[in-house]
Length: 371
Image (cartoon, rainbow, N blue to C red):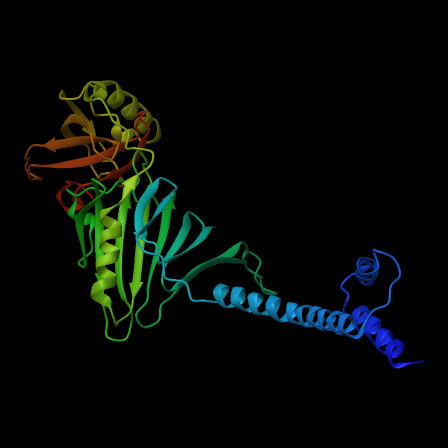
């Protein structure tokens, strides 16, 4: 084999090794020989070799270019993203408000026996769980589930726990005119246009806690709870964010609007239903603003008297902003040789349709012949 033949074989080997598809070499040879068989001189062969080498370099560089592009995409995908700014919106179970979009929201929905944990929102974390109770060998009457809610906050973190209480123990409507509805650390406030209760707790080795107890519009025995825990540093900023959250609270659906002209009918419905379960309501007139005389042996919410007591009974009813009817029932008595004059006022809350709920009684020490 002469030098030209060896060079031609080497050229075909190089082209074959570089081809990305099976027929690339055939197409190259076909284009070279399209005018028919001819001799290839040294200069032409050198040009063909150079073209093949350039093709090899291009093919070899292709994976590097692709790899570089993939690395660029990967670097972009792993670049840190900025924290969300502005506000996010919460709307669930009748409660709506805005909160910082940078906070995390964890949906719970865990029902813990009349208390439902709706969500956890903030920079810390929270978890509500219920686990079955396993009775011991001698435990014959223990069953059900054991429920609990846990909030975890580290330094500079805040968590808002949202709950709704329904059913027993029946808390009743929040009544700002009733001092007995507060403990020494609480005060009445207004949230979303409705009465609420605020409590603040603070200690040197525990998180700062803020609690708002909110009314549930049109509900006799339900309340919302907004429980907040936060730890320094940054308490002032976090508190401002929480207070802005509470200031934005709205109720969805909207609060029921009651017509005051419908009060007499609602009073009659409410008293009839209340007396069917407790005869101590029987003395009150079903027509608001009127007065009747009666002799009673028991007051609503109290045990029986030792003796009969002549009283005068009156009824008043007004619609409230919370979407409930507030019925005020008063029993008064005159002085006698064995008693002082006095009165007892009972507040009975009615649903929009007149269904009675919890009653708020007066001071028991003023009642004659009791206990």
